[in-house]
Length: 149
Figure (cartoon, helix red, strand yellow):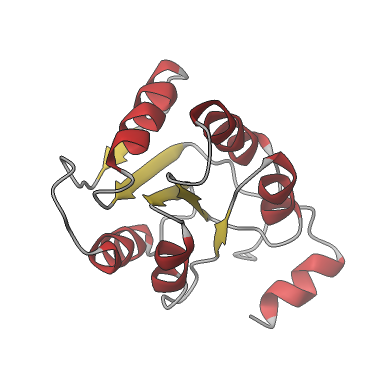
């Protein structure tokens, strides 16, 4: 079975640092309302923590979990993306609007979205999460490119 085939994204693993904590909690409530299974890896408050710890924790948890995807939230989204992408089979994309989110799924088959809580409005962030959930990987020429990653 080709590991890059379209996969129904059901479960969601969440993690954030202190800067992303409040937005992570909003996203968690949004997902629960949509009847998604949610695993929250923390952080549990807005006390200072190191974002790589949570990006690595989420990435390790996702290992072998093709039916799940992850959402990482920090201040800019960049640090979480960089840390998560150090892991094999993680394709983390910084999503900052609907188009970037849609393309991250369609063309890159992203399985982790990162969000910058200090750079995005709550309503846009939730629209991005919804778009990430609903958008399928197109495959085709994009599959060849993903295999080169």
